[in-house]
Length: 419
Image (cartoon, rainbow, N blue to C red; front, side, top):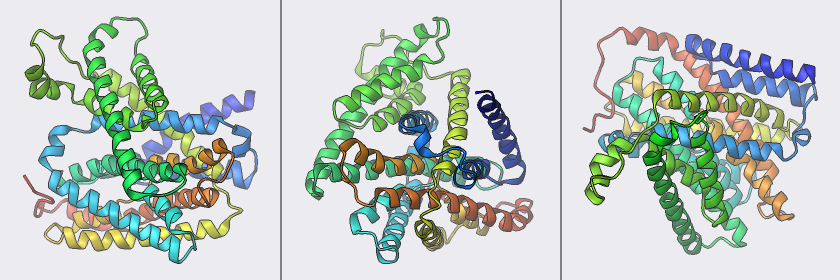
């Protein structure tokens, strides 16, 4: 046990060093974490996914809950209303085009059937907020572009979850009926949003009293775990409930004065948002979970299926090409620097990794291959995550001289200025 504890402690220290190196060099820290996992797993064989057993799926679910809460808290309703045109253009168009590019490549080149190809495409159509947000904060780009990229990374992750869960639910039902699946999913997600939103409303009212309890910092995620489990037990989406909870809690003050007090009596207890210490706690938890999860990704990459790994690299190339074409069309009036940054900001992150593990878990729980090519999909998605991070890192480093040269020039036309 001694070497295990030494490794865990050293890994956390290394994660902080990688994060500091990220801030200085723009080389994503998650790249090093995945490489550590690759060395521990496929290269040296010290750790395998089988050794972790069911811990991996539980850890993936816990990580997803914290990611969704943190994303919801950071998602400003005011910014959503202010920049919705630019957000729709970049997020929705990019999601659809990326999903189509990945699915078409997987179907026509890798040979997967249409539905598994669409499922794979839905998992990798978004961007990783844990990678995108720190990078763009290090670059001097227009505030609108920074907002759009930040919100895209959060919203596209939600779209990945919604669409991927929809397709997996269709596989569970035994047949893919667009009308039936859409109806069931709309009902499921509507109920999940209501449960999560009401939970966030209740918790924002109780938060002032909860803070008076000793050691109360972990009570908020504990409450979300209860909401998540209850929503899943009722047959709805626990992930969407967690996201709705985070959005309501993060915008509690705005919602209170804009809507709540107009509907309820003014004597109701005031709503509370999370304080800075509580937000820092969530970010620390996300950081720790992200550290171990990306090492787990590296351990889980099956290098025995080299064909799937290579197809993952090909899909990443198709995703970059689709993104470049899209930005040239919707951003033709923007500055060249901002177009360049937006074009290369498509690294995949934690949401894609968590979704990739779900088809295999569904098949294991059902005792039958409900979702075909589950292992191949998981391998290809992990490969896409790895190569998208590597390619984005290389492109950022290659473009860095041009970015630095333009940072000191007067800012050009504001990007996505749709106010």
